Length: 361
Image (cartoon, rainbow, N blue to C red; front, side, top):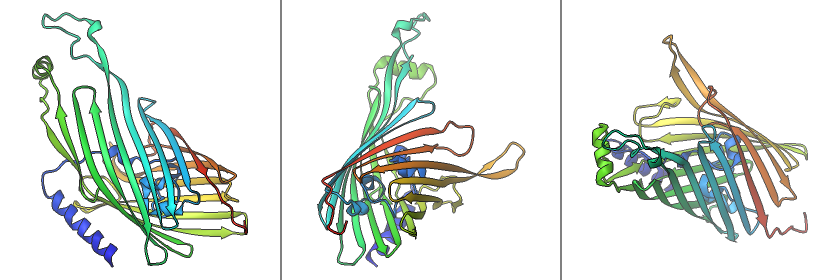
C-alpha cells in the first residue's frame, strides 16, 4: 500500500508541474545501457539482476550472485557522429543490501566553431576555425535493500548531471529515482520512478562581447542563464520465466513507460500522460547462449498521402556467458524506428568477481 501511495503522489505532482511552464531535458538518460537491455527494447525493469540494475532498477541489485561486478559499454549513433559510453561497478554488501556506481557519457566531439570565420571586414580566415565538444555526463549512486515482505526489494538512485557545450555554456543537475521489485515464483514485477524529485539542470553561459555581436548580427537569441526541468516518469514492468526441460528457458517482459510531460508521440497519449509500451524476449541455452528480441517505440506517423500508419522499433541481440564469470553481449538496435535511419552495433562486457559455488552446485 505504501508503494501505491507514493506512486499516486508521484503522478499527481507530475501533472501539477506539467501545468506550469517547464522544459524537459536529459533525454540522453533515456537511451538505455547494456546490449542485453537494448536487444530487448529496454524491457528489463522487472527482470534485470546484475550490475546494469543501477540504471534500470536499483532495487534489483540484490539479484547479483557475486560480491562484485563491473560492466562497460560503447556505442555510436548517427554514423559515428555521437558516441555513447557507460561504465559501472556494483557490490553486494550483504544478503540484504547492495550498491552501485555508474557513469554515463553521451557526446559529439570535434564540432567546427565558425563564429570567427569571417572578420568585421568580411574577410574569410580558415585559421580562425576551431572545434569544441558537446557532452552530457551523469553519475548514478545506487542502493538496494530487502524488506520484511518476502520477495519485495526497494532501491533508489542519486543522480549528478554535468552538461557542457564547449566553453560557451554548462550546467549542473541533480535528481533522485525510486524503485521496487516484487518476485512471486516465476513472476517478476518492477516499478521505476525516474526523476521523482523533478531533476533540475541550472545552465550558465560564458559569451564574450565578440560572440554576442555574432549572435546579434546573425539574428540569433543570446542565451541567458536558466533552469531546465526533467519531469518525472514511471515505468511499470512485469516479467515471467518459462522452463523447457533442463536446457532451455524463456524470459518475457512487458514494460509501460508513463511520461508526464504530455508532448510525446507514443501509442497512448492523453495529452497529459503518455504511455509507451515495449516488449522483450530472451531465450537461453543452459544459461550460456542467449538470443534476444524486442519491439518498442510504437508511433503513429502521418504520411505524404495523408494516411497515418504505425511505426515501431525492432531490436535483436545475442549474448554469451563464460563460466558465470565473463559475459559479452551484442545488440543490433536504433534510437528511431524501422525507417532508413542507420542501425547501431552495440557491445557491452560484464565481469564477475568472487564467485562462490554452493555444495549443491
